[in-house]
Length: 406
Ligand SMILES: Nc1ncnc2c1ncn2[C@@H]1O[C@H](COP(=O)(O)OP(=O)(O)OP(=O)(O)O)[C@@H](O)[C@H]1O
Image (cartoon, rainbow, N blue to C red; front, side, top):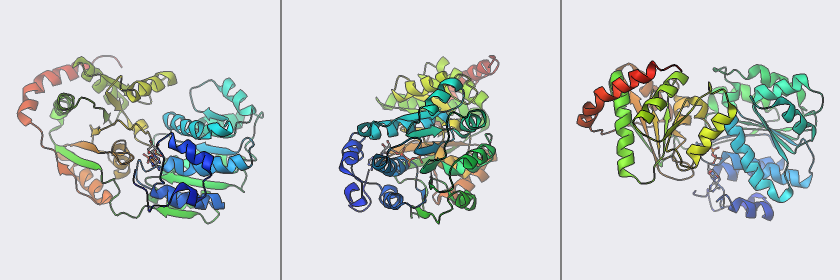
């Protein structure tokens, strides 16, 4: 990924052992968000970082936190909050790899995993706790075997999502957590879309935070080719099958994420695409078993499955470098959701393409997206004749899947 201005990690104040370790992840020169936020964090300031998807926001907080931890190691030193289990696990991984030389002990506290085991891990004072708010609040309410009274760092990754009252409302849990941590701490907030919730965020990062936002007008990365297909609702699935077939025929190495607006649709599409013998797997919040969710994601990450059909549970933060294409089966109602979804491709300087399926009823949503990202989407030139050829077969198959019990 391109460095910001030739400033190296050393000049930012990062120590040699961490620089060496970062190289293992291909992190050699700082990205702009890292260049600006790392020195502020090392100086002891609160920090709000708003930078495009895939621009290295995770390392922008992991590196300075590890450095501070190495100077004064104790547990529990840092608390990171994340909106989803999958994202928490990815952040934990970066802490583990980068923190290996100092014997970092981390602990993941996420829902639908064994509470007793988690309580035990917390009582062992890990250096870093990475948690989803709901489960951590449950522990705080029910256990006295650990406390967060000494934490130095609070990180809110995807900070705006943590404050939104979406289908999962984290605000009550956040109140419990904020009540359990010291007022004197460093608070770090990161997201690709901070602006809507800026005022509320400022209340959490009280100490006149250092605020850094990437300057570019356009809010999506240049390496991302953004397309749309204006089509009738009843032809969506045929277009989807066509797009996947085309990608499979033209590329040896390919990987696609498809976003749907409901768990049911996610399930139906997954089932339908499997009937067409596409190697795909689903990820949505109604998959009860956490193990099942992690397994689905692992299979997609390792390219055993080339297609991941997902709801917005996978829209934020997930870093899967191989994803070349994002297909939005529905036009997102909020531009912000669009930005995070398409940000699953074209990460860390790679090229990627997104195709948004738009019906005549969604044109206003498309316009809202274009206004927000300050860029126009281009029409995708699909082979309509081919789509018409497969239309009946695809629709019959989809209907079969719809009546299969969920
Ligand atoms: N300085 C760097 N040079 C090269 N690659 C980097 C650098 N910093 C981070 N990366 C890599 O870039 C990828 C994206 O980083 P990361 O997941 O932190 O993005 P992000 O900004 O948090 O994106 P999102 O908004 O989608 O959560 C990761 O694979 C990470 O290892």
